[in-house]
Image (cartoon, rainbow, N blue to C red; front, side, top):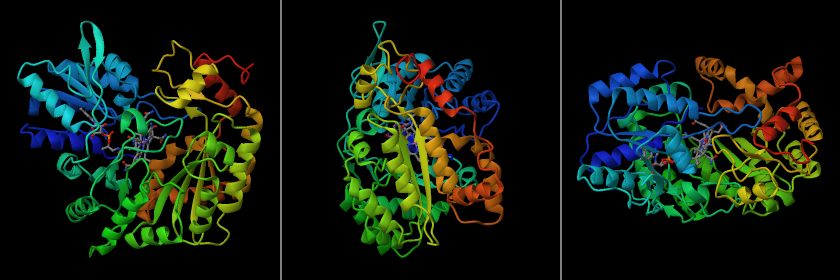
Length: 493
Ligand code: B12
């Protein structure tokens, strides 16, 4: 799924509002020959400074790991070849591991967390010949050492980013991507593995007024006619009252639009709230409980009671939404029994059983370990992360109480019994996603296209093709990944 680069559009808008001339080069659909696209953009625009937005540093998949850092270094090299100007990196990928990304890319400056204010202040400082070293969120070399000033997470007052002003939205719309909208920054949850409440957005909630959010949607709707809007908040329905106010404001407006959201918590996801979502124009959403085992919900510190997920599933089953559930297998305390609890939940609550609702229950194995999280400390204590760990390698945690061969067998059994179950292992099938998107478009099938995972799995199960693309020895691949990061414990001995 291509995500329109919302972050850089916010920053571009802020820079322009501060009196700078700004141009955005979106490399998302430039498959080959970055060099040419970069050279042309530099020659025609003649920038005095270049900012790069680094959204993802890897694909967060333990079985098929892909690092995006080598490609980024190539992009930076191309830029350096044709432009002798300061280079600033920013974005969530940069904010996760600032020192690593800064050094690896050989940037001149890095901006961590929110970009609008820090980037404008950085440019002002450079223009007036002052050192930007004390600007919150800015990192640079000082006396031969990387120096980063702590970011200041200000109220969320940035102007609406107007994506189509900066990038061409058409290729995104062609493949079914939504117009992305942020209603708040900050996350007050304390999930042990997560970075949102840390270097990315901080723990303090910074809410936008619901009227402003819906005004932004209204303007984009009439200007760009996107097929759907996607809320990209860490958790859309927290705080609950804020999401209710946004939904009610949408319902009050005289137009109709389709909505989806990626971070929906099972908390308070009852009939009334789901009804409000439906009336506002939601037809799908992603829900991220990570586990249905009470032990694991507690261990992950998910911030909702184990009952919430069962109540949410019962309420969702009375609707016609398409819902993509995410489960993360292998956190601290995971056993084959707790894994089975999550699988049993999917088998019991997420089957279609003749109802209009469509579920996809996506099970990932392995938990990505990021610096600064509680999981980092646990992983360090248990030997998954070495003191001299190379952050350029993707680092993983897998509970030592899990028998991996049996875990793979359990998940495969569930996938064989239930087309709703989709495994992280199945992701090889995504090479067909572009062709599939064209097919769906040709037949004008409703989006989001992931709703067809279930139908594809049913077809695969009835024809015997379901597991054709799955690698052999999945447990072995998981162990290889752990070996690469220097783990030598019980899981591989
Ligand atoms: C929403 C979301 C999604 C949605 C996107 C929907 C959509 N239509 O956009 C979905 C579910 C599709 C998704 C998918 C993926 N995601 Co995601 N996603 C997010 C999330 C929660 C918010 C991103 C967002 O839009 N934020 C709002 C914008 C405004 O913020 P921003 O981009 O950070 O920009 C600000 C600053 O970073 C900075 N900035 C940005 N660019 C620049 C540039 C310069 C020069 C400067 C100075 C500053 C600057 O200023 C901006 C404004 O303040 C983040 C986590 C988070 N809380 O940030 C993860 C996150 C970005 N995703 C992540 C990942 C891994 C993925 C996937 C690869 C997962 C997968 N295996 O499929 C895919 C990749 C999709 C893609 N094509 O890129 C990781 C990336 C980390 C990593 N390891 O690489 C994150 C950080 C979550 C995490 N910690 O794991 N994602």
